[in-house]
Length: 253
Image 1: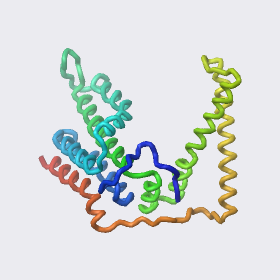
Image 2: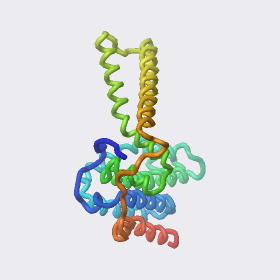
Image 3: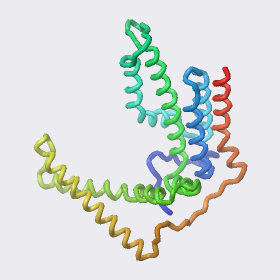
Image 4: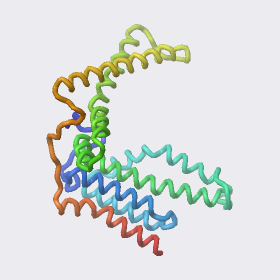
């Protein structure tokens, strides 16, 4: 199974985190996110400790802080949603800097921001230390349904092909003097989108026929079998187990 070149989020390195088998990192990230989501929102100190744990992982992975912070900007829409919650939520109100805000809305905004930011940060660290091909091998090792793994593999493999097809169609339109400048040009863009869909569909049929002619019977051959030692599992699961200890302490206090 292959997935082409490394994705743009991947940070090349030779850190202990990079060296971990992909399925251990996937399991650790999922377990960490589950623990974070399960933490009561009132335990603010717990979320601070989670952030410290992620900072330690980023340091071990040698992922620059600037890179991590820039990639966290992907959650800006969720931040905008969280900012609106204190204004639109109902219930008890409190004055903050002359503004009447909902207490439940403030807690909800904090809940979304804290848990969302930590989850996105964990995902960014996973993507920064694991290549796309490794991620697919990890999903396969974790016994994800083979059909889903194959769909993800083809999506990654042919994403650049479809993007390049869109670029050629745009150049062809511009070479003929077309420039989208208003609603009256939407029809041309819609026809281009339809043509792109038809070309993609036909390409998919040709690829499928080529695979069948080479013996494809519904499953992809496993070329590289990834395994993990007990020490590697222990190293990878150190993050979620530390977070679990913090979560349990947060529920007891």
